[in-house]
Figure 1 (tube, rainbow, N blue to C red):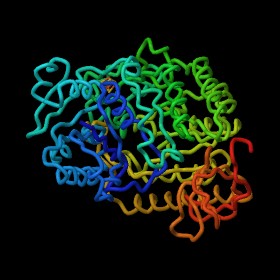
Figure 2 (cartoon, helix red, strand yellow):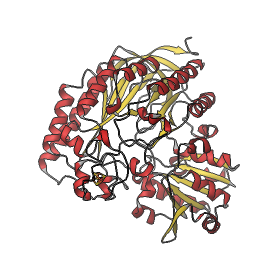
Figure 3 (cartoon, rainbow, N blue to C red):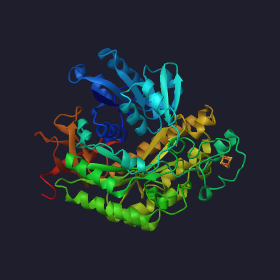
Figure 4 (tube, helix red, strand yellow):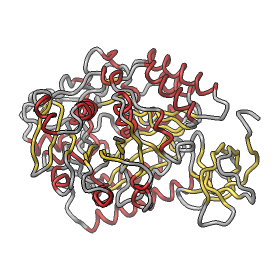
Length: 539
Ligand code: SF4
């Protein structure tokens, strides 16, 4: 029996439009559990099933594990139809954030949905030969088991400790199932869970806070529990409620995983974490619920990065390691210097959502907008490229808050920030806003107008930053043909920067090149002239 792991993450209606050069952690984790239990498994992206009629002629599959988010509902529904067309006896199990949305699960023709952490569930399902009766007979005490129409909903009774990382290492062999693994950013999980268990005014009001004192301010939060069952953390995010306080993966496990991925030909590694500076805060001995206290564990993070960059620099090809995002509330000059020493020229993300300090606190953000700006300045001084993430249409948004954000973008960010990304707020299942039914802003002409202005300013900001790149050189991996421009190829920066369209009459696919940026094609794409083709590192 071969198990097919279907990666539908961010596929939306069937094909990823954004983050096309990213490979998430989840499917490799599932593959690791299959390997541990001697089950053959293969990973496939949802589009490679939907767009390839011959896909199922190649191998025999009986069990299908689909991983997706709520926004991927259409892609998941479509792939389930394909699977049953292939064999009506297929056993289809759904996992990932999509399962937190019960209304969506009800619409899915699946045997089971796994809620939250799924490692031990999958292992016990494998050991039960995917018989739900035998699973129920043997594991009823360990899990919450519910029936939703004909669908089993399975959830672990308690969250795992940090030992989960030792017990279930992610597969590195199956990375080559992704046809684009050699140029993609491959995510390696280093912490799970989030330390922001503060609750903002909006969910406190909507959820009926009884002022137990736990959420006076982010520094003094001591527990994730709330007597009124109001979920913790930023109002729009479900991570603290789903995964609890942070747990860190050991240095050796991370080093092994990264080393194996490099051996397979991965060139870009992202250390994935809801907050990089949560790594070993409290030494994995106590649960951390405050996003500010204690301070980050500079010593352990330095040791990890020192060994990782040694590995990176031993590779024949130019490779990069970078981190995903940080909480500005933990950033200090020493931490920024340390990142500058080990990961110079890489990108680093800061989630801000809004630059209006009052709004930021009301939605439960752990840091003020000023702290985000200060962090961006420190990173700039150390040669890191800061990317800021914003969300519009959040509960509590006002014309004034949008105007403040717009003003900061126009006046304060130019010298410190390389890129701004803005998303529209979408209620996530299991998030504090959804659970407390916090209202989105009412439809108002002025709000709409201000949002459009904000978006326009952001596009302009990003274009200007790309104009600043003209004349500069970037090291790139040539990834695919540019279908819009003849004899051009899309290439991705190894360290940081936008996608680049480069001209070549010869086939340069898979080559590493250095290109001088010559033109801005859009707020996401620039044009470059190849000045050098690398054979190996430094040649
Ligand atoms: S834990 Fe709950 S009741 Fe206590 S202060 Fe926070 S929101 Fe209010």
